[in-house]
Amino acid sequence: MYYQRLGTIPKKRHTTFYKEDGTLYREQVMGTRGFSGAQSILYHHHMPTSVVKSSYLGRYLPEFEEDSNVRHRHFYTDEVEESNGVERQFVLGNSDVLIGKLHLKEEMTSFYRNGDGDECLFVHDGEGTLHTMFGSLSYEKGDYLVIPVGTIYRLVPKVPTKFLVIEAFSQISTPKRYRNEYGQLLEHSPFCERDIRGPEQLETNSELSEVEVITKSRGALHSHILDHHPFDVVGWDGFLYPFAFNIRDFEPITGRIHQPPPVHQTFEAHNFVVCSFVPRLYDYHPDSIPAPYYHSNVNSDEVLFYVEGNFMSRKGVKEESITLHPLGIPHGPHPGKTEGSIGKRETHELAVMVDTFKPLKVVERTGCLEDEHYMYSWS
Image (cartoon, rainbow, N blue to C red; front, side):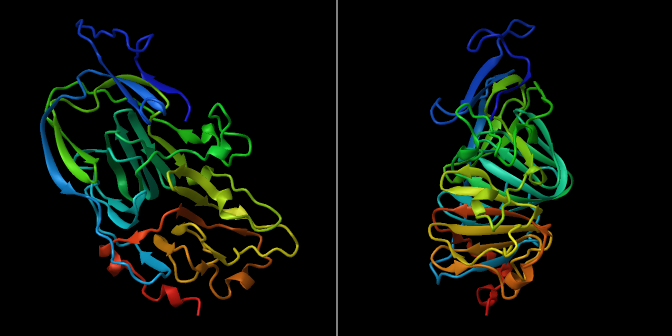
């Protein structure tokens, strides 16, 4: 990411910074990888460590299915139950990432932070505001909201919102191959810094009152009651902050023949990547086949979340379908889809793909969402 600042900060870091009443603002360095990764410095009215009560709420990691035969899976997630914002309906996961849905009708009932890793919330439908300790950030349909580990936040939908949830146990960043040695996105990147929106307005609340923050850490949920409002920041600067990027600002890379999935990559994290399939012109070789070729996922599981449009290589999927094509067996277009793509000029599909480099497991509670016949839909 690039440098940003909001609010009021002192001229030099780690120096005195006084309020009007002569007391000190409290400086907090928030960073990654032991002070060698991205970081920001925030200035609080109150000590961020001031907690009056702490309690253990229980495990949040889902229970996974017992080992079963390797097969393609398909889940309809449009009917996932509404949540308070802390609870998520996970569908797939491993030790690197959890993938699921969050359907939010009303504002989150508590403040929340993920201390286990970064979160990426993709807005399938809806609009509202992400309120954070770094300030507020409005969201709309098609936005990726990337929220750094440890960020206290609260989602307030303007209209009911459906999110695809991608919870990492690491940091989520832009692909390294699209950045130069200074961290700037290069000319051949499918998006640039102009497309990225950071916090828009700082919301400073200095009141003293007991406020609960639900913290996700070490595989469990914890309740921390602060003696002050968590959004008591008067200013911050640095390279670590929540941001939004809309999938419609992703500029597709095309060619004379079918391009491989890495050209759609949008974000990367430890052992997985996130890709965006957007409306684009098809290949322009006179004999090209626009539909993807059959391929084996040699070292990765492929997850597709179908956002909208006509999915040119699939039958039987609909908006909010999630498919899993596991490593070890081939997958590709459904019968008739290869022939049907020949001569087509463009596609208007939108989809989010997550490729993991460790096998994914299916969460036990998702059986009611599954299309049991998907594995045989190529016959």
